[in-house]
Amino acid sequence: MWYFYRKYDNEDLDNLIEQINGIFCSIFVQKEYEYPAWMEEVKLKGDFEAFKQAYELSTGEEKRKLSSTFELNIQIESICSMEVEPVSYEELLLSASDEFCGCLDKLKSIQTYLYENLLKLKGMQETVGTLKNYYEKFYSEAIEFVCPFCGLDNMLTKKDEFREAFDHYLPRSKYPFVSFLRENLFPICHTCNSTYKGDKNPRDFGKAFYPFTTESNDCELVFKVRAGVIEDMEISSEKFLEEIETWNALFGIKNRITNFAEVNLNGWMSNVQEAMKNYNVDYDHARNAEISGCNPKMQDHKFVKKAILKAL
Image (cartoon, rainbow, N blue to C red):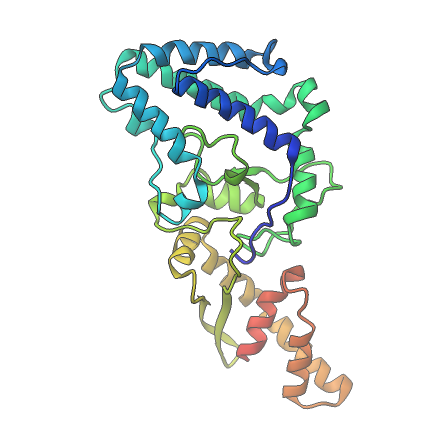
C-alpha cells in the first residue's frame, strides 16, 4: 500500500457492531441475553433465533469449532500478519452434521443481511447512518486523494452523489463473521476492487498489508531509466517485502504503475527541459526543482513522477 488508512472514532457504528457480536458471544457460551430494541421488528432477529436453534442442535465439537472460528476470524490484523489462520465456511462444512449445515446456512443469511440490508433500515439511518455516510466520514478522516492500493485512481469525494464500493479484504463469501467488521471493510477504487481483486483471497498469497496499521510506511518506487526508456521498476521496503508480493498478486500493481509511468514519461521529461529553458538553469537544478514540487506525494500521482525524476 502507498499509504495506510487512519483509524478514527465512529461510536454509533462501533456500538452497533459490538451489540451484534455480543449476541454471537452469548449464543456460543449459552448465556441468556436480550435483543436490542432496534432488532425487535426486523428480519435479523428471526435469523438469529433460527441460527441459535440450529446451533444448539449441532454436536459439541461443531459448537466449539464455530465459537473458535468467531474468535479467530475477527482478528483481521493478526490474520494479515499470518499470526492467526482464519477458518472458512468450506472448512467448517467438512463432515458437518445436517443440523450444523443448517446452522451455517442461517449464519450466511445473517452475514449477508448485516452488510446488504441493515444500514438501509430507516431506524438505522437515523441513528447510525448509511454506508454513504460512513464513506463520507472515511474520506474526511482516512483517504489521501487516491486509492492507497494503486495510487492511480482518484477516490470519489464525500461531496459526490455516489461513493466507492467497500471491499471485504477477507471475502465475506468465504469466511464467516467478517462481513460487518470495520477492520475488514474499507473503500478502494473501482479498478482495484472490480477489475483486479474481485473475490481473491489475500490468504492465498501470503502475508498481507493490514490497511489500518500504525507502522510507518517505507514503500517507495524505484525505477531504472536509460535513454528515455524504463528498463525496470521495483517497490523497495525494509519492512514489507512479503506484503508487497501479496499486494502485487491481488492488484497487479507493478505492471499498472509501470504502464502509467511509460505513458507519462515523456511529459515529465519535457517538464524538466522547459524549466531549463524558462529559468536558464542546468539539468540538475531543473530536475531537482521538479522533484521538490512533488508534494503532497499522493496528489496527481506525484509519487510516481518523483520516482521517475530521481531515476533520470
